[in-house]
Length: 508
Image 1: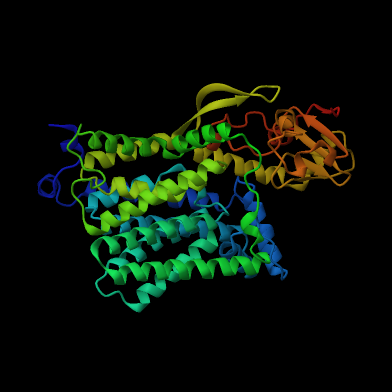
Image 2: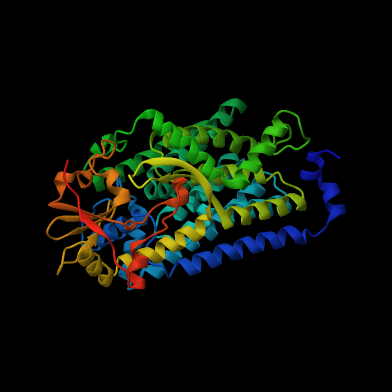
């Protein structure tokens, strides 16, 4: 029996093999249960490990004060408004974090619906649920005060609505309105998600042109224009004009380095399950198995249109990530859509079991390729570390400690700033006192006066003095950038009653 027969069996064979598909359903239930557990536990850990989480809270507080200041770049107005509205009710960060869990569950449910729309069997739906729910980016963001899960849920809902309204013989007005509303909401939650809106609209318009359906072609073009005009108008009003479209967010990183980071980031985002799915696809593409993981030779109209939209989206998101490969979350929407596309063709309980096993493995351990030398240089030093979920939860517990008043007073004293208290800088590189002194880890000194980092906070002239300590201070990103997670944290010294060794840095 070929590998393809093992991995993808026909429907009649499936019924004789296991009519109820209990094994795959149990795997899906385990995956959803793990997602809920991670989300509920993380909801009580305060802000996310990403510094943007703090920026979102600051933006929400500004909204409650009657002014709009984007959390970063162009802003995420719908999500910022959601956070502000939740905080206005008196609910704390736990409630806001639980909104992310709700978004995660909606995203998983929408992924399952989309899988059914493109022809998945119940086993294929289970494969999609396991692959999506147990991806480290899903688990870590399931309780993070970030727009990540909200935008993913809206993206998947937009795909389902677009395909339903676009391919219906006589789409209802409510379906078209819902598609437009969700499309605008998606772009207002995450502006680069406009890539998906354009990709889906283009794929449906192309289908209309190819099949001679003038109605579908005109309808999709009209929807694209409507979503675009409404979204840009709202961003323009909030940002005081269209000048935000020319904002420089690329900094000065060399293109070669940027491309290397992007390639490594894509590999990291795929994780074991994504690599497994891609390998099966490539084997089928070159005729090594009888599997048909993406419907190359057997398809339906919905799968065909979604496949074109996915292709457009992957190309555009790849360009976007190559330009600014700063966060793996930038890849989450195309990654999940790709997993839905590939995993929806699975029709074997064995493969669902393999996906579950790989999902567990990729969450137990992660690979890091780089480390920082004592001088701050990035060196190639591959090894294993804890999985992304465990690293993120540890980081968030660390953030709770370093944001406490007791720690910040202790750090100031350890750094030689008695009777002062330092404040954590939202995006680094360390802590700053009211007198203008920067307290930083020696491992992060390479960031100061680094030509690749243009913000004033990375200029030595920005500070009255700089004091470097021997423990790691600012939360690191660890697995997300394939670097060793923090080992010797200042928070550990604080909790154990140890002392830091800090020194005044001589300016160059």
